[in-house]
Image 1 (tube, rainbow over the protein chains, first blue to last red):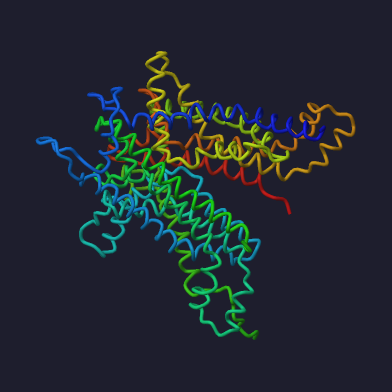
Image 2: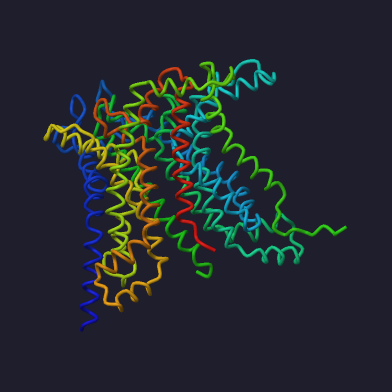
Amino acid sequence: MGADRLQRQSARNGWLLSLPALILLFVAAMGPLVIIVVYSFLTPGEYGNVVWEFSLDGWTGILFTRDIFDGTLGLADAHLTIFWRSVKLSILTTVATFALGFPTAWFIATRPAQQRGLWLFLITIPFWTNLLIRTFAINEVIRVEGVLNTVLLWIGVIDTPLAIIYTDTAVLIGMAYVYLPLMVLPLFAAIDRFDMRLLEAGYDLYASRWQVLRRVILPIVKPGIIAGSILVFVPSLGAYVTPRVLGGGKNMMIGNFIELQFLAGRNWPLGAALSVTLLVIVTAALLVYVKAANRGSNPHG
Amino acid sequence: MAERRFEVARLPGFATVAVATFVMLYLPIATLVTFSFNAGSSIAVWEGFSLHWYADAWNNQAVKDATVRSLVIAVWAAMISTTVATLAALGTTRRAAFKGETFIYVAINQPLMVPEIVTAVALMILFGMVKVATGYQGLGYLILAHSAFCIPFAYLPIRARLEGMDLSLESAAADLYASPWQTFRFVTLPLLGPGILAGAMLAFVISLDDVIITEFVKSGGQDTLPTYMLGQMRRTMTPEVNAISTALLALTVVLLTAFFLLTRKKG
């Protein structure tokens, strides 16, 4: 019985010690999310904010818009364009970071042991440095009077500056740039565990380089690929800073669209419903991630 | 001459792509830093070396205020989040698994999972109500919000340190009749020190770099350095922004290097 009491005391201490953190998180991180859910079912106020009347307009407003003349519901094309752009750019960002990140992770994992730390550090530094500054850096490179155009004009490759800035391409370049480390790190972790003797076995059995890559490497590092893809896809979908700095006002993604509802759009319930939707999608993606990550940590699972 | 070995781990083209990726990763940042030293007002045409954009930024009252505000918020957020994270780490490691432990773990990591824009609008609504109700408009809201989202960043290195610690030292202290408090004060805490410092530095960097939550929670005239820079985007960009970015970048890199040295595994 003594051991049982000790164990209960230990659990109670665990809770007590965690309590200050939990209170702080509840007040300033988790709790407010409840407000968002409540607000999504209210009526928009005339000058922003909400009127405390139940309404589902916030939720229907995600996909449909009410005709201002006859009041009928029609598909909200502008909203669909923004959702499609968000999903498309997030997928393309994931693909681009994988295309660059897989060779990079492989390169790092196959360096001599004493060099590996340095290469990893080089990937990690941009990961922890200010996202806004990194986005600024891309902005300054690709803007009309930026370095890229200046150099290309000077060499004579182009006659007129490339108008990349404030397009979807600019947002894609920016997101791939800022989220690349999120792809490389889990890929590296997976490749690092990979048993290189399997390659010898593959080559001994007359497999070509391509066959080894396709049939041996990729299936084994798959959990790392899934993890990296989700780690890139999730922040891409919720991106706010990068589309704002590189997409200009027009090339909005969901994050900017949410902001718009709370500022100029003055439709808080719609903004709240969009936020809840984004939250649900992201949570679902992260659950898949947790599964993949757990599978990755147990090679025999 | 030694015969060329067949390198099994080599995949054609991978090294080229990897090196190109590293170059692409650092070239924009290098450009940004380079043009902070430009004598002219262009961010793309080099007109000679000068430090005058740093002097301009230094003498710009708005930048000065934003810098001080950023530092004040980051120091408070780092202290608060590290304190509560240390307690939580002590509560969730080195004891028998207990009911609700997973919940605590998920709750602590929650700020990493929720898209920042969602938390930002949620806090804007909540703090908006509190502002109206209490009339208080100060930095407290930003400090509170930053303290909360910094918790997972402070928690993870402290937890990692605790898990790697040798329990036998504490048992030895207890065998020598140290009270639980003495054991904590003179054995656990000194051993945990580097982890706490690492957590605090990470929290400080994360708070210093925050844009989205700050942008939505701040009251009028409460720009931090990142939100000030975001505001500058609407105007023509001069190397002054580059100078501010470079200074912020330098501070981050110094702190991160210290962080890595502190958390590096020995051997």
